[in-house]
Image 1 (cartoon, one colour):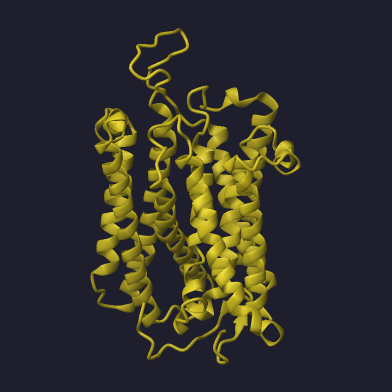
Image 2: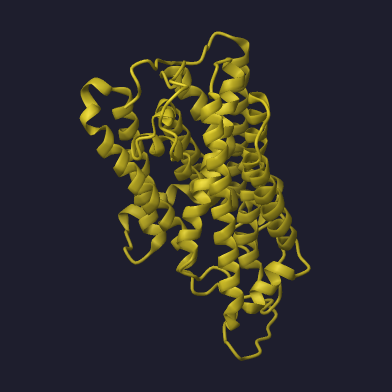
Length: 406
């Protein structure tokens, strides 16, 4: 577990800054709740969604957060599963961040359904052939196993013998969960933009980079707000290299996914639409994800930094760009895949007043934007309350170590 020299603390809840942050996240969460109530009362016609685009901006961000949550455990898994000592002091914060990001994504997902009270039907009427139904158990298992993992980290005297098994279980479950999230789209045979066996490994790769970027932003935010002297120069170097590698792997899988689809004759039309069409999804993919969210961050973190401050700044900016690019990709993937018309009868010309064969248009409405803000409010609120109540932040850790492997 953690080195004996590491002690953990809570944040100072007596200063005005902590209260201001807490109140801000409460207001953000309240806005999301009000937007959900407004949508449920008036119906989904107040959103920008249609019969063609049934998954809008809230689902885009919900999927992004759910996928990212498993990657937030990167630092904890590297320290526990792979035994890399410099990462161990940050295992607690990584676990809390993972649970908070997952909760924020699920809050958006549930509140966007329209009848959130019917979520219990997934359990009472389990359909084992539906990946949607199985994902309910994957999400629940993630909370249980990560919470147990945190327990073994925080109660080292009694739970030390279960620390590594809990770490392995959490690591395995995060891969299973991300595979399940990707399979929602990969198993969807009606959408040629989705249906592919590559979607599951693609989501796993994306979760690694998105999650690490989310965790780094939380860590640097707490570093700036609490004044603690971490991360060390060595950990900064490791995180920069790790983020650059994971972003490169994510970009590689996205390229392979689109090349595979473009090579398949039956999917070439949808790929031309997403890659070269006259629509918003093309700049989101090429510029938002490809350039801003991948290439620029890789250059920022893989090129050497002259000072510790410069390394921290470049890591923070690169992480923010990765998060931005990740949301651009998810929007292009989720909404763009629905906007392209479904080919109901291959080889036949279909025409009707319903809009068959027509590109669907979608513009997020204000309630959808507010629901997204509420989801991020839930993430910040949970992290703030937990680190206020429980000792999650390391005060110091060994800055010099012979372990230099990644």
